[in-house]
Length: 77
Image 1 (cartoon, rainbow, N blue to C red):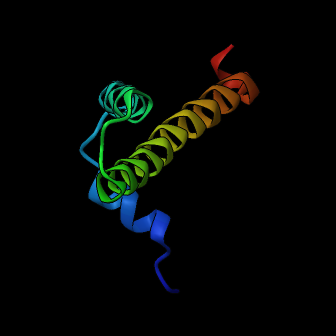
Image 2: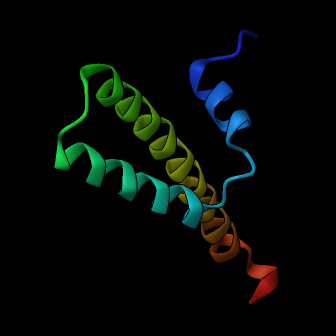
């Protein structure tokens, strides 16, 4: 099975926790909104933001799956 871009992003940023990725994403958005960057810098920031958003999404999906599993498991009740 071929690796997707998303797989590469997650493995490259696997050490990032949710809070770290979220905080960096907030910083990226602030920098983009402030302007004053070149086109190349803006594109690099945008790409980094997309990567960070994927990391955050993976963390949130994992948390949702854990919650769903815990709620569905009658043995834990």
